[in-house]
Image (cartoon, rainbow, N blue to C red; front, top):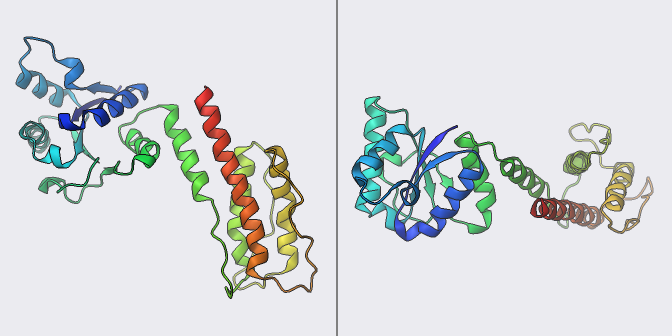
Length: 261
C-alpha cells in the first residue's frame, strides 16, 4: 500500500479533509496531522518521520499555503530528503487556489483542483499518480471520456466531406460498448471522399437502437435521405443533437448507478 503525506494550510482544511478521505477510500495510506498526532507528541519529529516514510508528498497549494512557514518547511524537508537520496518521497503539487508556485515546483505538472466542478476528474488523475485502486478512478475517467464524445454543431457554409462523420462513428461505437452492445461495423472513409446521403443513412439505425435502449424517442430523423440530395450542415445538426442527447443520458445513467451502489 502506497504511503502519502499531505501538506496543507489549515485554512484549506475543508478541502484537505475531503481529499484525504477520498485517498483512503482508494487504498492509499495517508499521513495527516489531524489523525496521526497525539497529545504529547513532538510535532517536528512526527512530521519528519511521516515525510521520510512516505512514497509521495501531496502539497495543497493556495495563497495561504505558500505563505505558511509550516507548510513550506514540510516541502523543504521533502525536497532535501529527495535530493540527498535519504528518502524515496516524490512531491505531487495540487493546485487548489491560484497562487505563486514555489520555485522548485515550477515546471512540475500539477493536479488542478481550482474548478470545484471538475473535482472527480482531477481526483482520478491524482489517484492514478499515487497508484490507488479505487473504482472511482475508472468510473471518473469513463465519464470524462463520455463527455468528450459530445459533438460540436456544424455551421452554415461549412465544407462537408465524408470524414466529417468520423466523430459520429467513434461516438456511436463508444456508446454501444458502454452499453455492452455489439459495435456497428462502419465502412471506412477515405481522405477527401464526398459526403453522400447513404453515409448519413448508415448512421441512423444504430443511433435509434441505443436511443430505444435508453428510453429515448426514436424515428426523429427526416431520413432516409435521397441519393441525389445535397446535404447541408443543419441536416447533420439534427443527428448531432440526437446523439448528444444519447451521450447525456448515458452519463446521467452511470452517475445514478454510481450513487446507488
